[in-house]
Image 1: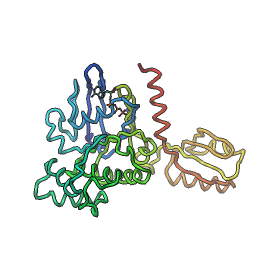
Image 2: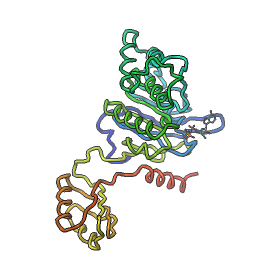
Image 3: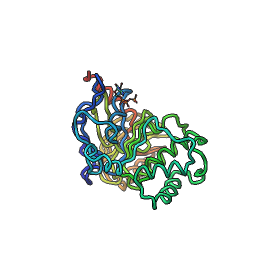
Image 4: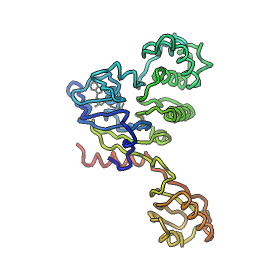
Length: 323
Ligand code: ATP
């Protein structure tokens, strides 16, 4: 496990231990173990048929595994599924809505099904509709909503009881770029409110917008699970910085090499990638020094890890040694 893994900050929101699942004649999950840190957004990725949906269904207590243990917020999902359901929300990849019901009725039905006390249902409906931008749609039938709004309503149904962990299977499938962007904003908001999310998707560029961790499975096995970024960008730990020049300068590499805290990873005449160990103040001083020496710095920014490249590398390596 990555040394930066933040599970040390508290008890994990979910724990999966040696989980195996079999469909008749085929093993979909094979001894999968991991922990999900509270407050994280984990991208669950893997090729078609890797076992993502099966894993989410097991976590949601909807599929009974062959072996292993699963807990959510400290509750054993297999021993106490009803108690676990209070702690989690689940959006399946092919969710259904009652098209003839209004948005208000759909949310109220979900609240009651999730055990929200009758006296709190009305308030939960209003709160959830407001949070999802559906307040003005409450009287409309679900069947009259656009795809993006249907998705929001389905998510509303999954979170109406205030779960601690939200499991989402391909939530952005079929949405246009604007609706997907709005969905990413919603996930960031939910995380900001303290919810932990586990999101499966094939749209990696978008997972990249909001994920803090990446969990890769392939052929039913866990291939990788790690943090995607440092949680405290201001701290004095090494981070990658990309520098681009507006005018090429043959001395760029030489000017960067040997500076305190700087290790040059790649350098050409008009761009460089460095690992920088220092505070944000030291980073500002470095920029100021480079500009002061006459370099035409067009941009100087943190080069965040690209989930897409990282995923392809991971899955590629897994394929080499895999079955
Ligand atoms: P995708 O990205 O295509 O949605 P996935 O990663 O979600 O795939 P799963 O749907 O969990 O993968 O499927 C894992 C494996 O289990 C696949 O080999 C699949 O063919 C098999 N499988 C899934 N559902 C069943 C089923 N009901 N009966 C038999 N095999 C199944």
